[in-house]
Amino acid sequence: MTKKTTQTFAVGTGSVGFFSRRVRTVMTAVAAGALGLIGSQAAPAQAIPGGTVEVVPSMAACGDRGFEKSLQCGAAFTDRWLDSWGASDVVEATVVTRPDAAGVYPSRTTDGVCVYANTAPLAIGLHHCDRYTFVVPRTDRELVSDDVDAIVLLAHESAHGFQEKAGLMPVETSAIRDTRRMLPLERSADCWSGAATAWYIEQDMLDDDAVDGGRELMRSIGGSAGHGNADAREQAYLTGFEGGSGACNTILGRDAFPVRPTR
Ligand SMILES: [Zn+2]
Image 1 (tube, rainbow, N blue to C red):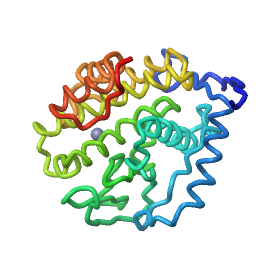
Image 2: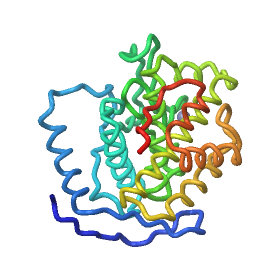
Image 3: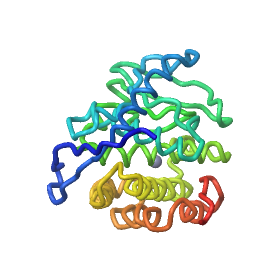
């Protein structure tokens, strides 16, 4: 067993200001993050989409130290969450789309295509397609006021990866603005991020009050087409937090998310 040393980073209040949000990391987590880095360098080179830059997952980046570091922290959390399901392939990388970069490519996971863009006429912010989670800083920065925001948002995006593996097409559904079909995809993804939050707390990776940060985030991003309003998003998130991933399958109407055996 690796010796566990608990280290608590400084408390940061986000733009919301109501909740203290502390991210707790243990040295084992930091070590795992470092190993993850080495692992990804040793792995066979997998080309990330052109014009994007990989966010290097890092537990050591946690501590509410700005957008870029919170993204690295969130990516490291997502890796751990997916590893816990034996599903690390669902998100191969979180990538930042560079200014003036854009691309379309056929998905390896679905019959559809993936699109990303960070150009003057078109910026496609936070979304997931075919094992990559895309981020556009100029549109997404305002969503992330601290680590918990990044952790919850990247967990949400990973849900779309599970949906794709189950044969669903969240990207196409939102591209054609089919809001009726989008809703269960988005609500089950909010649910999945709630289930992730509960697991992080259980693992002592987050403090208990992280759920308040997640709820506040859901409320703040409620109302966009096909995602549900503030109440609906908060409710979906809490459904996952309290009921686990099985509840997210219920929202989605099919078994896209893995469920842990009941003990
Ligand atoms: Zn989504």
